[in-house]
Every structure is written in C-alpha cells, then in structure tokens.
Amino acid sequence: DLNAGEKPKPTTMALVHPDGRVALAADDLSFPNGTVITPDGRTLIVGETMAARLTAFDVAGDGTLSNRRVWAQLENAVPDGICLDAEGAIWVASPVSQAVLRVREGGEVLDRIDVETNAYACMLGGADRRTLFLCTAQDHDPAKTGTHRGRIEAVQVAKRALATVGIDATTLEANAALRSIVRRDTGEGYQDFLTQLAQASGVDHSTISRLI
Image 1 (cartoon, rainbow, N blue to C red):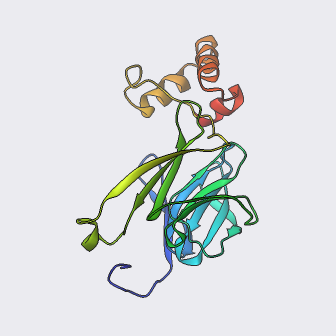
Image 2 (image 1 turned 45 degrees about the vertical axis):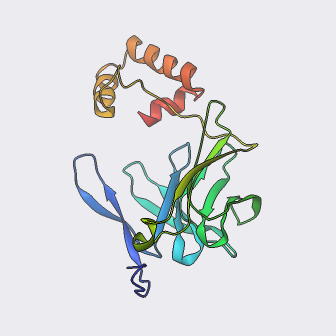
C-alpha cells in the first residue's frame, strides 16, 4: 500500500485469455504501471514505477511473454502512464519530476514537457494525432485528492500517434462480433472489409489482418 507507507515488494503481471483463463505473464515486477504494445504486436513494454525503468518483453502468438530486457532506465524520473508514438519513442508521465518525457529505447530523453503539478498519464490523439493529452493533479493520495483539483491538459507535439483501427459502434456492437464475422468470411467480402479498414485508418492491409 503506497499511500500507507508500506515497503515496496515485487508483484506479477497476468495474462487473461479470451475464454477467461488467467495465467502468469511475468513476475518480479516493481510496481508495473503503464503498458504499450508495438504495432507489429511482438513487443510489450511496461513501466516499472519503483524501478524507474521501462521493461520490454517479446510477445508470442498465444500472448505469453519472453526475452525480458530493460528498454530504458530513467534518471530522476519514474514511469506512470505511458504511450507510444509513430517513431517508436515512448512518452512517459513522471510524477516525481513534474514532467512528461519522450524517451527512446536505450534511455535517451528526446523531449520534455514540464507541468505545474504532477503528470500521471498521457495519450496522443486529436485530429492529426499530434496532440498529447496529459492527466495532471497535485497529488495521488486518495486522502488528499478530495480537496485538490486535477486537469486534462493538451499540448501539440512534433511526432504523431500511431494510426489505429477504429470501428463505428453503430456498425458492430462489440469486438467479439467483429472477430466472429471476419473469421467466418475469408473470401472476397473479408478482403473488401480489410481494404476499407486500411483506407480509413492508414494501417497497412497485412497489419490489420493480423490484428483481427
């Protein structure tokens, strides 16, 4: 319990399968926090807050993790929420340094945005995917947040977010429905569907096919 002053101890990350089974994905993690997966689906990167580092794993087809390694060791910063940009760098919200950092693999800090209070989460978005949204607040302690105010702040950045595949909720009620439809239809209709998604999202045909 961080807010109660409990001594930090390692914990685990769980893999939840579509059928509800839960398996151990990784252990001995120091406060796993923000997590991203690279566009090819082959690498998972998680922020270990208490270790001040970003840790990477290879992701197998069944979701299991292997080849654990340090993606970036941070200095005078700790990772809370994180997000990946189109060049493969990671924006890191760091409460202790009152900033959001853009970090590349190896630990080099490419950019820094200072905030008035503390940054707890970040995400790229906006019409051109170049707006970095920041979740900031004076404190994370529940005993104090009732009297303190938080913000969603926005700042324009040079590097855009990754293109994402979006499905209109009025067209499909759930992702499960999408999977059911496309896996039954592997003919011409399926290919037309993938082509439409590729045109709408800017993601290449083969990547969309792998994702769904």
